[in-house]
Image (cartoon, rainbow, N blue to C red; front, side, top):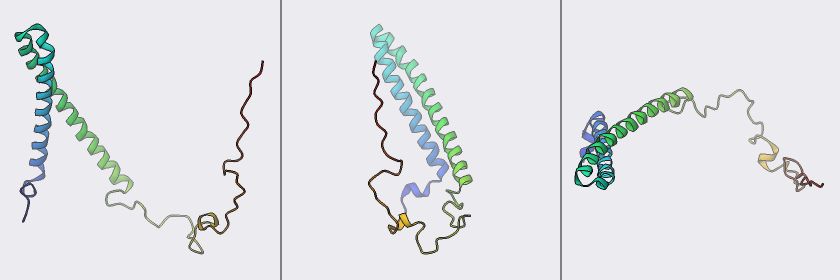
Length: 131
């Protein structure tokens, strides 16, 4: 049995989600505006709620628009580098294949030479400043 949300087109779900986010911004802005306006009494609370709702709605719309732009850029980049339908991880690279199934002696454990020093070299002595 199909879920109700599966039958709605994707554009309708996206529009509904956008409206819900903007409504949350309006509600949050109204609450903050009313709280800040309450210092001026009931008329200040009412005016603050209206101004906060407008500011919250505009901020939510701007954030949603920015998120859509970023998602579009990410999708384009994913397509360019091969994450979506491309050749990311394609084994046809230019380096020669391994001859014995291991890419190096160190990665197979056969040629490990462990003398206790790190591969970056020995640790340098600390500098001592004397006057």
